Amino acid sequence: MDVLTPSQRHKAMSHVRSENTSIELILRKALWHRGYRYRKNYKALPGSPDIAITKYRIAIFCDSEFFHGKDWEELKLRLENGDNSTYWIKKIMRNMERDRENEQSLRYQDWTVLRFWGHDIVKHTDECIKAIEETIYLRSILNSKDSDIS
Image (cartoon, rainbow, N blue to C red; front, side):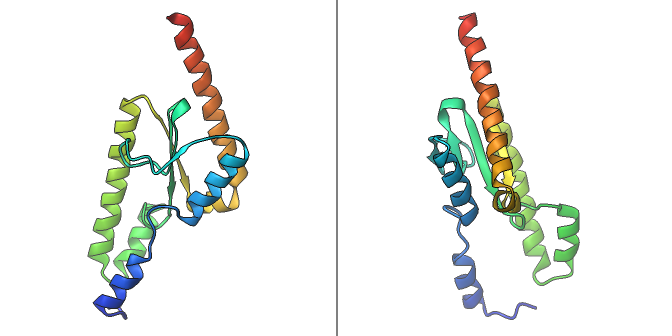
């Protein structure tokens, strides 16, 4: 049973951010300091990637563990034993489905999709940046080969 009234729950949930979250800010700041320029919450693409490096066609999503279903089987078991389990299971499953749909659509449009969990961004920012830089390097090689063919 939820200990909050519906209006209290609504107020609490309205403070959950979908843009400019702390994990996005950490990753964006690290990219900016490395000299990479990007668009944030790029609405021209499916799923409005948190970070879009348009020059290299890289879409980056910063996913929170709870709302995007990290370790889903374990999380689902915990939710089944909690309050309002039907709502949360349905919501998170739909989020995961939407993530897959957006990723598929982006790949179809020749975008590379990178997803990072919030914990990894906070604890291992350098590794996340390294993965992005490796992707940029691979995309730049691919782009140079494409231009050589033309």
